[in-house]
Amino acid sequence: MAKREIITLPDPLLRTVSKPVKTVDASTRKLMDDMLETMYDAPGIGLAAVQIGVPQRLVVIDTSKEDEEKQPLFLVNPEIVWSSEEEADYEEGCLSIPEFFDMVTRPKEIKVRYLDREGVEQERLCDGVLATCVQHEIDHLNGILFIDYISKLKRDRVVKKFTKAQKFARSGA
Ligand code: GNR
Ligand code: NI
Image (cartoon, rainbow, N blue to C red):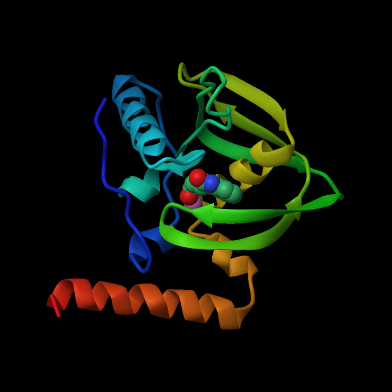
């Protein structure tokens, strides 16, 4: 496994729609292992391939607690096939928008269909933090970020902050 660099706002790749994976093979598994290592190192509870600069529909998630056994989930071409009417608020963050957090309202429960690490189709009912995380990651595959759900005023402020920071980093001023 190898740790990769996580891209951050305002990288335009974060706004691209990732391409479906045609076959789940050794190279797909290698890429997902790199994603998992990068996510654990960050640390984070989920990561989409586009966040390491690879616009393919691949997601890794692990919402297990520090004192629990690791529970990595590998999702290839994930699709939400059902979501509950009931909604839940959760304070979200994103490794591509470091140190910014805000409340987001999303369906409380979802059912996700995906191919697993071996390319076998699976369906899983998700609630709690897992439901939030799966929705957050599938949004990444569609070029959507959690700041798209907050007020325009707050969003513009955070985008501006990261755009400015990047200019300084480039100029070395
Ligand atoms: O590590 C992460 N934590 C998190 C917390 C609340 C809602 C969503 C997330 S996902 C985030 C990692 C990330 O940016 N995945 O794309
Ligand atoms: Ni994210």
